[in-house]
Amino acid sequence: MMTRDRIAPTAPIHSLPRSETGARTLPKFEATPRTAWPRRILVGTDGTSSSASAIKAAHSLAERTGAAVQMETVYRPRVPVPPSSARRGIDQCERGERGPAITLLRKVQRQRHELSRYAHGWPLRLEVGDPVAVITGLAKETASDLVVTGIGHFDPVGARCDGRTVLRMARQLDVALFAVAPECESPTRCIVVLPDGRMHGPTIDAALQCLPPDACVWIALPDRSIAPDPELIEQGSAREIALGARPAGLPADERDRRTYKRVDVTGDMLAGVLRLAEDVGAELLAVPNRGEPGPVRVFLPNLAEPLLVAAPCSVLVVPDVTHHGGA
Image (cartoon, rainbow, N blue to C red; front, side, top):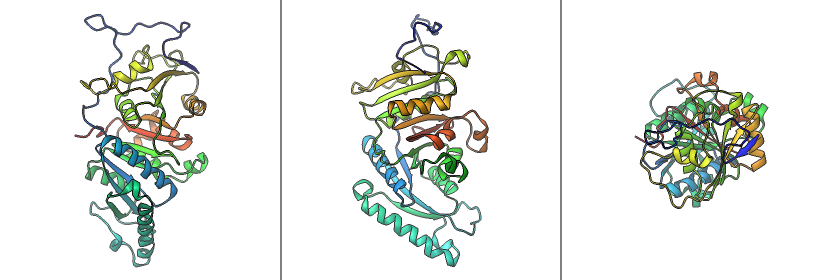
């Protein structure tokens, strides 16, 4: 890997496109609207220690942005509930499953009480059904623009085989997903991963919104020489790339004391990002999730799901089709 803030002298020099005035410009990218983000956060919880980390992270972000937060827990019955747009509470369970559903609710309520300094005043709702379908539907119903949940365990083999809820949510959500690692209340060291070498404004902007003004940010791109493409980012420091992703017309934040570094990854992008995360002690990886919500994302060259399986830290997944910034 080669780390740089400017193009290394030994690298091929490619001129950036110039505007009509002759000024150097960066390639165009998906613009993000000029609104506060996130405005509404949905926290998926099951009362475990993984959920505790998600609650703390949501609290930290809500304090910084003023977002409204709602908690949701979902009981998955042994007897599948038929698909329905109607809300399903405990009374929709088979009689023998109402006890376990109530136990789950009490567990979550007890955790919310223990973490009252973080979750005070957050409404909590219990639903019965498939967690992914329920949370995806509720995110749309409540116009949430960020879903926060625990990332779960860090056993890559088990994570791949057990069909973790967080992986399935990454396929279905059309809003950003913040999968929080244990003890990650407020990340300060973040790698923004652009695996195809193209700008993705929503991912960069969402990552910056999740970070304090003195954070360290690395922007990881594939090395130009191994993935030649005229649309790839050819030149520009990490700071130029990050500031170029700011919503149109939004003035520069004078309080921004973040440090930025650009990293061009040679070889396999996934392996390179994981090595970088270990080397710099990253606490958050932010990555685009290309494609429309649904199974088709699995067949696209996305790193979102592999990172959710293998990353040693929290992961922020930002889709192409998104309510990012709100309507």
